[in-house]
Length: 189
Image 1 (cartoon, rainbow, N blue to C red):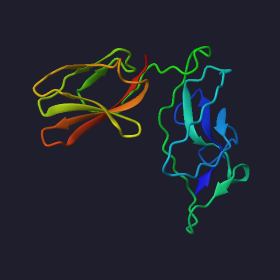
Image 2 (image 1 turned 60 degrees about the vertical axis):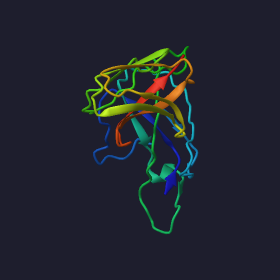
Image 3 (image 1 turned 60 degrees about the horizontal axis):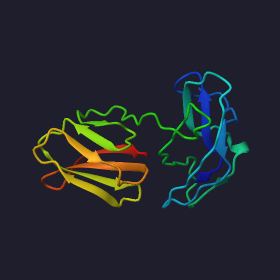
């Protein structure tokens, strides 16, 4: 199943839920496109200037079935649509456009420290353990853009001046060519 009206609802309270109440049929920013392609990424951009002291946001569809278009993509009558959402950014300055102030790695137990994130000229990686032999950086299409041998190093520095602006994934690889950790980083010059 696919639907339109995917968007963002800003609130002053965490964990938005209707608790059985009807959906608000409202989102501060939303798209009326029905996204059906499961192989490609779609870019959705919008501008919203807050009229309140919002501290939280909910991503999804805040509209009931009477206020959205639904397309069933298979013969099974599924009552849910799932979308992968990535690279959401919010700016505190409407003149700048988008600005990412951090990329949190929520609930990540790793001791590996990557900073600054977003990176400008130099990306520093601290607390590498000895099982990590190589650091590899991939763009969002999966293309390898950088690799560095870090065998028997506690720390590593990566010059990012030759890497284009964007979101990247860093793989930490052991001697058996297994990825033992994956992290996300933003590079912006």
